[in-house]
Length: 220
Image 1: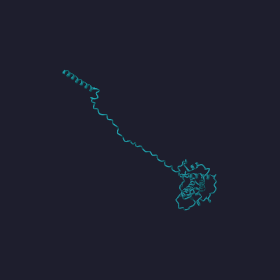
Image 2: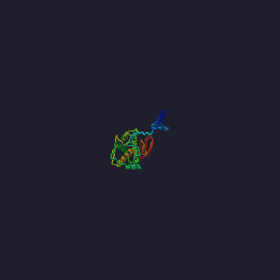
Image 3: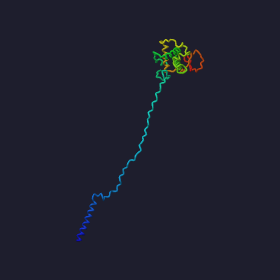
Image 4: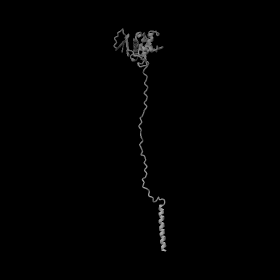
């Protein structure tokens, strides 16, 4: 009897061992040793400072105010578009005006009475003196004011000049020269002169003598 008990006890022990062994193999999760792998490292990009791209700053430049027009019809600039090599050519290309303003009438009248029959340069020189006077600040500021100023021109009677035959060649030439003198498209040989007298007299003026042109001596 005791032998049977011992046998049964041994069988029970063996069964218990086998049961334990089978239970340990199971899914393998309990007894399996995980490989010693390094954990994956997720590298986050380091935050970067915002980049500044240098751009040239283009600032609109305010347009300079247009310069004010300071030249009028009596401009002294000879750079006007004139296709002439000589004063004679320029006068030939100048049309005879159908109508002259009061100012140009005064200028042409002075050229006519003071220098008709003289050279073209001589007539232009007389006209340019009247223009220079009107701008000088020392004389009246208009052509008529200069011409009719008291005791300046011998052809003036009171506040008028003698009648002129405006159909004649001398007047037409004086009118053309007056326009050229007024627009400054040709300078006179004594440019800048403010005074002149007939070459036949000697007033002994204390002025700077410039030159004689035809029948007149010019001074600054």
